[in-house]
Every structure is written in structure tokens, then in C-alpha cells.
Length: 231
Image 1 (cartoon, one colour):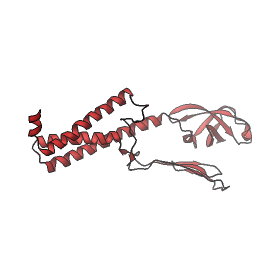
Image 2: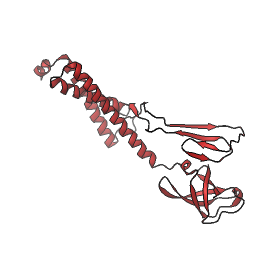
Image 3: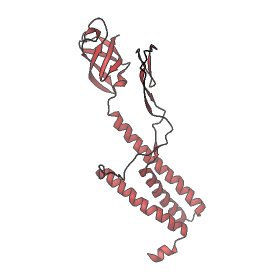
């Protein structure tokens, strides 16, 4: 072992010192992620929090204005127009890609591991250090990007399982249980929301009761209660 180590160039030794420890940490991260070990610990080796380096913006900005200003519409920058008198909108901006968290613990370790082994393989194959190191750097960057992409996809899958009642605004529904007029009580409506057929509580400011089977449009929210009007 000593003879083998002594036979290595200084560059190869440095690369092995990078590749071996980072590979061991990456292996531990993978084991901890699969088994759930360390989820309740103060320091989690599989932590995916990091710097948001995405190409697009995913912002949730709550804008509350206490003045009685009537613009006629309440704009939700997600494609929905919500008729409402007060300015109390949620700005939700999406780009073409969800934000990528590149510089996470997992991403950096993956970068170091792949960078080290690809550079070692290149040097062993006879490629000079000036070519092997950049090659390893590029391979490491793609590994880090791949980890960030996996985290992004996992986050999307988790979000897709959560119902956001704001998505109901502008959608049509059918009255299931009659809704009293002038907001005097709640009824029920049925609608398809985020691919699910749902039954939701609803109120109405219409002057007449909305009977079962009436087609309505969702115009606003009151908590998780829909505000509807007759079509």
C-alpha cells in the first residue's frame, strides 16, 4: 500500500484525498436518506437546504392593503382573475423551471466525489493534469446539477399532494347542498380541483338561494370556504 501511494504523483494523491472521503460521506448520506436516520438530529448529513440558484423565480408575496381601494379585479399572477373589491392578493410567479438548489451539502459532496474519480480516471488514462482536472470539474458539476434536479422533482411531488384552495378561484362548480342567500349560511358545492373531485363548503352573496344542481363560479375564498356566484 505504501509503495503504491509513493508511486502516485502529487496531483493523484490530492485527487484521492478528495475522492475517497467525499465518496464515503455520499454513501452515508444515501444510507441515512433511505433509512431516515438523523431526521430528528440537529445536524442532518442528508440536508438539502441550500442556495437558490434557479433560472426562474418562485415567489409567494402576500400584499395586504387596509385602504378601501376598489380596482374591480384582484389579480393573481398565476393566470387567474379574481373579482374582488379589496386589494388582498397573493402573487405567485412561476418561470419555466422550478428553482434549483445547487449548493447543498448533498450537491457539493456529489460534486467532489465525481470530480475526484473522473479526474483520477483521466490521469490514469494518460491525460495530463491540465486536461484531467477540467474534465473532472465538468463531470462534478453535472453530478451536482443532477442531485439538485432530483431534489426539485421530489419537492414537486410533495407539493402536488397538497390542495391549494386558491386554485379553485375562477373554476366552475355545481351546488350539492343549497346555499342560502346574502351570505346567511353555508352550503356545499362539488368541483374538480387539482385533478380531484371534491366537495367543498360554499357561501354566496346572491339575493336568491342557490338550489341543488345550479352551476356557479368560484370568485373568492373565506379560509377554506368558497365564495360563489351564479353563472
